[in-house]
Length: 554
Image 1 (spheres, rainbow, N blue to C red):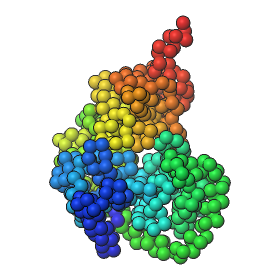
Image 2: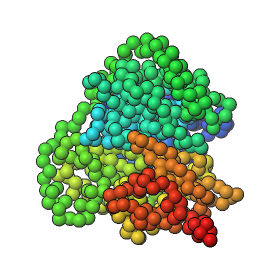
Image 3: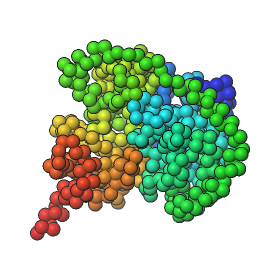
Image 4: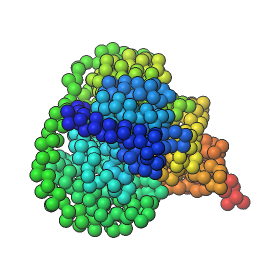
């Protein structure tokens, strides 16, 4: 992973000292809250429903054990002993005191972390495939490119005050675990004639106007990539709307002007941007790539085959939570933060320390945070899987539910967020507990449920196989359900099923949906999404709204 240079450390120390002075001025009254707001947002500090919230960047989701232990230390010293992993590969602390935030930022800086540009109308934390560098089917590790983009975008003088926030995601796999099509810019690294480049998608995004990104360029060579990105953001900065914040995202700019006009403007802007770089970015990229060298992999599986054959609990965990690694004696392990009834994405400080210890002892000192709010051990020798499973079990982290119905993405909702109009966390907990009681989720198989507590869609409900959107209807929580969404390589926005449900009706509605799927699937290997695509929405709507079916029959 990338190691901070002296320049990085000096930059961050200066930036943190500036913010410390700004905090003191806010506390003594020299700055009003309106004056302080843009300053705190530039440093990842929000004012939420009950308290301040600090959002910390985990660039492209990569951490080492020292950093994870520091996150645990911060949670204990200045928060309430836990952190919340988000859908943008960040971690949030929900209860810091304003006076303590500068100390938290200094503690982050000590291990090469920060909270810069995790908020505000600027380029946010760059995200990437959480299996990067490990996935068997990967073309190339996208993280050096993501790090290059992070360095370019951090404090970029032209792009600190964009019309709205701007999000970039990168993948080096055709599986697209980074949901690139739902980003302002999505980069899919591809190979052409032996050269690595990027397919560039633009204009994706969720929120109140969900859109799937469009292909702006099917191949941009790596030496051209950074100036090409700069040309895109420059065009958006000039052309994007600023009269209405709901229409200020680049997806609206693309929609209103058309992809061909955006392409024409980007192509016209690109030559001058390219000339200004003069190849210096490629020199930096080569230096960055050296930090992402492949670990020295170990051969041999030890007693893993025996344990797998004779221990059914362990076998279920392996079958559900591991994925194919590029080395045959390794696996990629996804650690679920979604124990049945738990808050999706939350990890206690003790759990963070356990994960750090495991990574350091068994897994080449590397962890990842996924946009699905889980923790990944990307390089785990199979011979250590049994010991890791036992250690995770002792910490309450061995739930075998990755990719299943209880592995729910959920935003903080009205329990924390000042923007939320409905609760998300209790809905996720109730659904998970219901299907654990029914013992159905392994029979159901792969099914992605995503829940948002407001129209901003931080829970990615639009691209859930089943999406749930909580809204306020005349002071009452109302939950709309969408069907058939997908965030993979063929991303699609889900279709709204019909009228919403009251809070105490949602879990029953989801159970009816799932039972209908089990009745109509062709075989256990046909997933919920496959069945939906084969039959359409009609049988699922009938399950959701049985009273309407009875009325029509009458």
